Image (cartoon, rainbow over all chains, first blue to last red; front, top):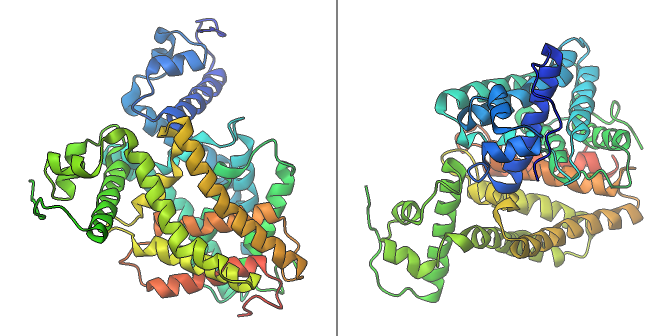
Length: 215
Length: 215
């Protein structure tokens, strides 16, 4: 059943941004559930209560949709994780901010299905053109570099355990990103408890005992 | 270019198993690179040097292919990680065996493209029928339960840090599974060094300092 929840007038810039976010999230959910090829522009329009003409007002077609969803996911990462972290001079506080803010970002958009579709779609760059894939890979690399540089700074300060910085970077990323697949809003822990637990677990494996929480 | 590397005689049981594994790995790689819908049985036949008739000797069609690849991945997990771990009575040694053997399994089949396609395809159960998805989810749950029970045993023995067992289980799984996406065979660390590092990092976050490696 098609339910059109929005009138077809021109949206203001901020509304437009919100509306695009809503469209990207709905499209990512459909892609996770049905696969990219099986998801049509009509399906997406229906999911967000737009007519077919309405959806084409926002998005020119499926060809660029994946790239747009991934850039949307990376924009959210910039805004909520990367930019705030770059403003923190102290490496330990920066690492704590990265873990907590990234976990919070993922949890904040877990669907009732029990996963975060945008985070999952961002992992799958195979469907992109080589040029678009290069751009997304570059944005991901910037995040990896931020974590790696932070760990290197901690190493210099004597705060890092004797671990390989590259393995540490990706182990941390894996532990945090996996939240997008297992965290369920009906679980017994609140989002902030999850953030605290995942911070404790990952920091415990990276920081020397003197610095990590000792419980 | 189609290169047929195998004569079309009937294979012995062990050869047949090896051949099926080769076909599943090649199919998973194509699915990761092109997507499931864009991958044809012809593409898979070509990738493993079989004729179209040859591939249908092994696999009835694309419909069950995803399910077969996932069961193949879970069979490998059973054989290399789950069954050996169940034979270890001591919880700490069992946890160490799980991490090391799972990391080894993932690394052993990283392609020159820099990822493990079977491990990645096993994550994507959306393309399955509900019945098949239920079966794969059940096998995954058995693995999650093994890790969770091991951590609960460590908790009883006073060896686990004060962390939530569920968050710990999935953080560990995320850190290890992420190997399938970032480890590159051209990197500077050997597979065994990676296994050692990822063990040190994940155990450091889970075991109390008295038990975790103190370096």
